[in-house]
Length: 399
Image 1 (tube, rainbow, N blue to C red):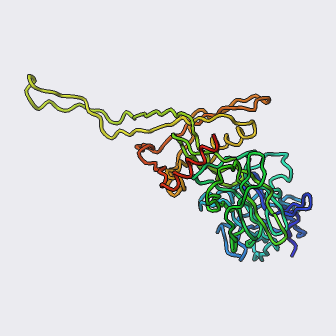
Image 2 (cartoon, rainbow, N blue to C red):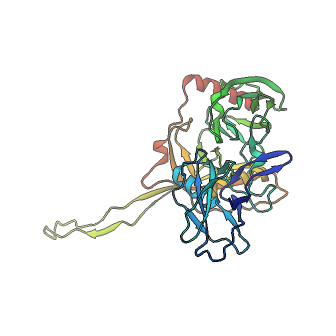
Image 3 (cartoon, one colour):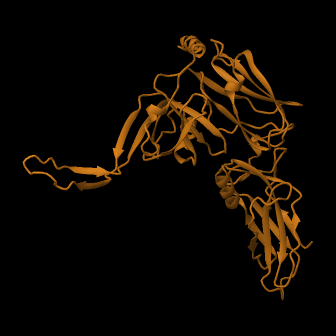
């Protein structure tokens, strides 16, 4: 066929070949034809995005006019970003169907030999590998890094904490955790689970599923991934913190397409605002000597906003937590395991100022609750007796 894919979003860098790309940045192709456009009215390239079995992910067939030299630069990132948003997904595998057509012709479609992975992620220009996520890809032979920007992410005793992993194969091996002391010396293992049949793409694993209880001397939890040939995840250590008395438990989608959690544990500020609603005055239908006519307000709504604060953040971790303010999905988790939550938005105070030589930064975040919703009446962070015993023991050791 005259129309071919001459460049596709697959990169090989440092010996790692990856077809995973950040859709919110770019998923670039170049299509090239050797067919002469002369005398062919309405000459177009037709493109459709399908799944790995050839079924349309997006029913629309897009039509593009190539340049005079027969080439077309095509970025399918925006279309796939919209698809992910509409379907509540963070990643999807796809192939490209393509054909050329003109007035009076019958398009004959071909399908790309390779499959590609669109991830609801974002990278900046001049990033190594462009929009490709090669350094995060994990397979039986590839060692990748966890999907986080934190230098030292936090995990809290008895609270949900996920590690995001970018899988390039559906069957990998085993996941386990290790407990480390303050000097990151090995203490013991947590639970080990075999991962089989997990879909290719972003996988968010809750570390609490692998924890039976922190040893009292533990200061870190290390997430480890083991494939047939050994470790396939670079060491990702989570600093253990005890539970606090006034938590605001946040979950957000980070810029790499993975969900992360954070507890704001300093004193919070709460503001409740009411809308004006509809005002009116009651008609006087009794003697003026005893009338108590008053203005009334109907159909008014109120909104609760909470300013959350934290401190002791390095510059790297300040930039990591700042992603909450630009995340497209922010939730307040209403339970420790995250089984109930409410979607919120970051409002006001969207910028942060820091000094490059400062290693101890504060951070504030203003969250707007849904209308007519009181967060403190909805949360249930109650510990079971056994959880309470463990938390008291760990807190004593931590302090």
